[in-house]
Length: 286
Image (tube, rainbow, N blue to C red; front, side, top):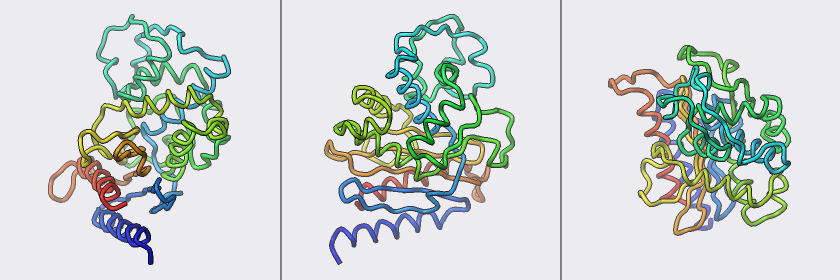
């Protein structure tokens, strides 16, 4: 047995231990970018996507920009309707009337998970267009169902009431974005130029919300990621670097998370901590 195999098996055992200790479902996939090996748990099972859906929305928008159907420079006026039913981000608290470029709206959607910005970006596309993009690049477990997620959903809402994805889909997408930085063929598979692929990775690296994957890693760790906050759980998907080089990709989704844990802690706190522990185990074990 090689040292690499031993490390993978030990890491897989640690990840299983972390998941088994929870009172809720944890689905994940991790890809070791040094060896190509993967570890997964329920990775092809559909699960609420929450804001991790925004990675594919960004990529569909970039494809439209590359084809000339949209422009980074398009000016978008922030209207009151953009903040209706919005429960995340900062623009909803600001005065309508400001003008953003489409580029800045994409940046706000990814780096701050701002749903006013998401509304601005997504309404320049269609659900059918984004869904077709996902299908074209092989994200068969991802299904976009709305422009902005409904606020009034119950905590135990059915799966078909929200946009869903899989951990496997998100790892595949991030892997393609990473490969497209140096591989023209990978960029072509994404349907965008290498320049736009570089923009996508830059936005993911600019993520400012430091929970989930970020939480237990050294503060200066480079991470290209997008997290999510759903009624049924928390989720995060990202590329983690070490010493300037990509180390692994992790997509982790918690589901069926109680509002309050038996010890009184909020369920979302434990969900995010669980994702952080998975990332830490990968960072030290791979």
